[in-house]
Amino acid sequence: MRVYRLNRKKYAQQLSGHGAALSSNRWNSKGVEMIYTAQNRALALAEVAVHFSVGTLPSGYVMMEIEIPDSLEISQIPEADLPANWNRFPHIMETRLMGDAFIHEKKEVVCKVPSAVVPGEYNFLINPNHPDMEKIRICEITDFPIDHRLFP
Image (cartoon, rainbow, N blue to C red; front, top):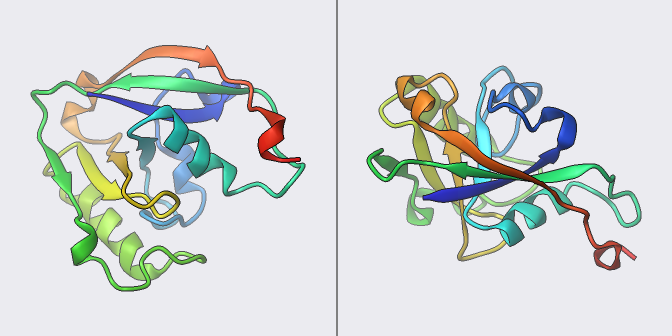
C-alpha cells in the first residue's frame, strides 16, 4: 500500500516522528513520536492546508510517497469507536490517548484512522519506534508546489 505525506523539503529524507512529538496533535500527545500520512495526495494536501491561514501558505513542500508492505497488519480506530466530538479543534484528549496507546502497545506499526478534515477519507499513523518500521520505506519524494489559487 502507498500512503502520502506532504512535508517541508528539509525534513523529507527521513521518517522519524520527531516533528509530531514537539506538540500535541489529534492522535498524539506531546513527546510521543508518530508519523502522520494520508491515503492519497489530495488528502495529504488538505491535512496540511488546514493549518495555514489565507495567504500564508509557505513554499518548499514535497510530496513523500511511502510504501507499506501488504504483509504488515494494520490496526484501525473506527469512527464508530470515537467520541462524538473527536474531530473538533482544538484536539481532544481522548483521541490523543487512543493514538498514544497505539504507539506504546506496539502491536502493529500502522493504524488507520478517519480524517477529521475530509469525511470518508483516512489517514495512516505510523509508529517510528516499532520493530517493523524497517520494512516501511520512502519510495519517492517530488517537489509539490501548492497552487496559490487555493489560498487567494
